[in-house]
Length: 483
Image 1 (cartoon, rainbow, N blue to C red):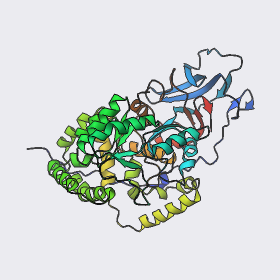
Image 2 (cartoon, rainbow, N blue to C red):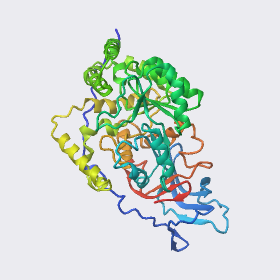
Image 3 (tube, rainbow, N blue to C red):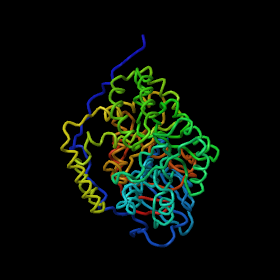
Image 4 (cartoon, one colour):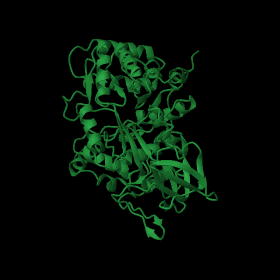
């Protein structure tokens, strides 16, 4: 008889007393250099910069105590023990790390710069405030995003863009609902795929993002067109497909969404029903179609969880990064707006955004009770992904679902650890794993010779407590201190 186990993880809890106080409002670069205060200026950064007396936290090699890190022209060239002599030029700068902890710059693998027009222009600065030095924008108007990336003043994070969500005949984010901006575009037929991908690449896209109402044949055609152009692929699981068939064609899959259907003991029955409803949908809004399917099938699928079947689904995904966006999936249940550090963090947002979010929070607090099933399922699945060797990347879907740029990435790290990852594995998910998506892991994501000097200096050791990533003292981008 086939093994069948009911999904029943430990209930989620939120303990406000364990929330760290917000520490970003008074960012100070206190570093002592030759008896004076080193400060950022409009001058070019020094050719050589030596960070001394610092504990290196590398996501691959772990903690390396009392190290010297030499940076030349924006690149790390030496990581040495404090007893070693490092050759320096006469004009080299020295930076006393004072036994603090140095980590690679963080990534957020799932953001949307143009989702909230009131917030768009502030997001880059907010990311840097929280040590997020690279971001992957996973859906929006390609011309607007390319222009934003080009015109944002320095300093700014490294920004990688996909352009619009590539949907099917019906488009979920088609702009008809004012609360959901036009992030998507339709690719109705397989024959449209090649021209679509080519136009996106010509407009500046670094990768493509495929969405949920795409047809299987068009999905395959888009994937082929992207591979031909050496463009990475991010994707939701299309509703006409299952994760184990769609996933191997993509470099990443987002939100853990629709995996629950494939992991159900009655997955074929649920998929047949889903496909019939989509085929029979001839008029209406893409959002309505998708929302109805999720509402009707998600919880029954989780209730029918079958571990043996789920292993069969996850095993083909060992080369497909899963970006869980746990802070989004758990938001209505764990209520991040009740954290002690939330008021100070949200106060950095534009007033119009603050007002809109307060109204949203007021509405959420009136919904009782909140069903925690998908939140618990998302955390539960982290352990299963780990066990089957499926890579995990850190992303937040900021600013959707009350996602504060930068701040929410640290919440995501905490939830990845809550789901079963070690602190070092969570850091790996926010540094090395995103770089592998773009095949630049030999250029960025670690503190080792040859890597780009995107770095974050912390008060305390994040390997001892992942919440210590919030205690930021300084941020460097491309070898220059920017915070």
